[in-house]
Image (cartoon, rainbow, N blue to C red; front, side, top):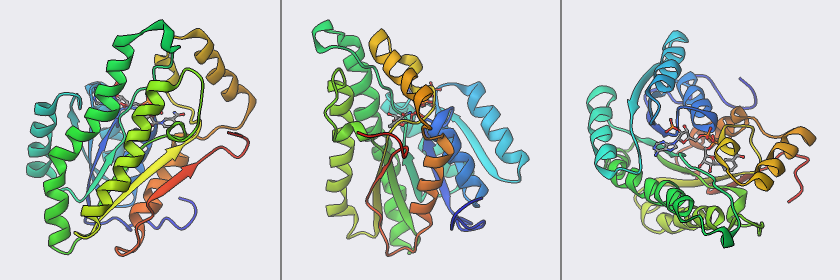
Length: 258
Ligand SMILES: NC(=O)c1ccc[n+]([C@@H]2O[C@H](COP(=O)([O-])OP(=O)(O)OC[C@H]3O[C@@H](n4cnc5c(N)ncnc54)[C@H](OP(=O)(O)O)[C@@H]3O)[C@@H](O)[C@H]2O)c1
């Protein structure tokens, strides 16, 4: 444990993490559990979720693996019921699942456009639909309530071949700003984390060879972020006193100039 993240800081909290089977989501689920939260892990790969949940339990934490495709609204609603039954009322949501499929717009990879919009935009909305009532109830009962989304530095930067991915992340960043207009008054904190290059499975899904090379080279050339770095940032955000909402956080590798 580093920095000012205090063990026990999240005792009594119930968290949901989407995209918890790898990368940033997995590391954040482990971090939140280490700080005392009960954590529900959502993603599609059940074996990876089970392994992560077992590790958390082995370290004395509480975790529930809930295999869910967050692009399927009905599945997310079923997951929310199960989490409420088995862990209690959710007061912390980390809407993190996302996919990056970079390509030239002229390649007209419509299936990749759809996949990014379905997960990065609609998946986030499905997550909000399923868990916002719990956040509202938690806040109304006087508990701390957090909605944190993973956007990207791509939300604000102009990068060739990133059009659709950047568009989805710009949606997430601006959505979180707008959500605060209603949810802030209800005492629900809303935050967005915009990471630069993090060493995860994300580039593995990119089919464009130039874009894959660009990311692989960056990982070779500079000391990029690790998932744990983002996890610690999220833990810091949700561990702040209830009246403090750190709303937008850009986190870059020191050597990434962008
Ligand atoms: N890595 C970076 O450099 C970077 C930078 C900025 C922002 N981000 C953002 O960080 C977030 C996490 O990505 P990552 O870097 O940790 O990559 P990752 O390791 O590929 O993680 C993506 C996660 O999303 C899950 N996921 C994919 N499709 C899903 C679906 N339909 N339903 C539920 N879960 C689904 C994946 O699990 P399953 O395949 O098991 O479903 C996986 O757990 C994404 O939103 C990404 O855009 C990453």
